[in-house]
Length: 234
Image 1 (cartoon, rainbow, N blue to C red):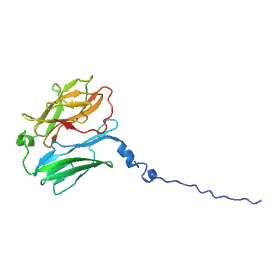
Image 2 (tube, helix red, strand yellow; image 1 turned 180 degrees about the horizontal axis):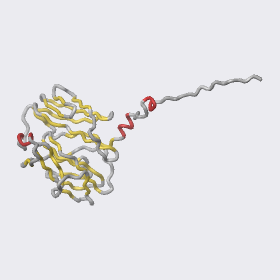
Image 3 (cartoon, helix red, strand yellow; image 1 turned 60 degrees about the vertical axis):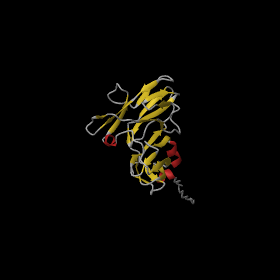
Image 4 (cartoon, rainbow, N blue to C red; image 1 turned 60 degrees about the horizontal axis):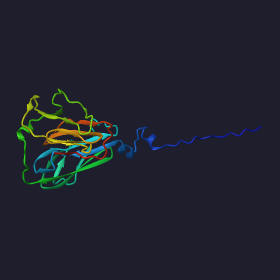
């Protein structure tokens, strides 16, 4: 009796996830992990020769903020301004420049005007240069929290911003710029008073020149993730 022998060769299907060692994340999915990616600047017009820090605001879908995000920075015209890997922008000559930040395949932009003439400065430049950190918190707190709740629409929270020098001493007589990342949820005035307008959450920050405070999140009951919002302040 003769026996027939069959050789069975298994078929292996290789996809991109195998090639990448199981860590492959399509760019479309990476982009979907962000609910907010915006840039804010302490000023919209900058005098040639001055430097400011552009602050990226990044929020994941779950409301968390990435730690030390790795961004790629670009400017539309390097003859007008230049920017380093940390978002520090130096104005070179008058004109309009667009700043672009790229994170996880997603990008956002910010327009700035560079002017020859000097800008009005409300704060003493010598004092501003001494600032090591800016802390935003409630007046009766020793240290700030990450989240603050406003329990009803129309309710308010009064924040304060305190600047410290390298010796951890307070620097007085400073005027801060306050910003809210979602003004439809809560607005903030020039004195740091936050008022709840609708359900959701928003990030509050105080700035002076190129100095930025910690970010605090204000939550109004039944909060939802922030989507497509800009920082706007007074």
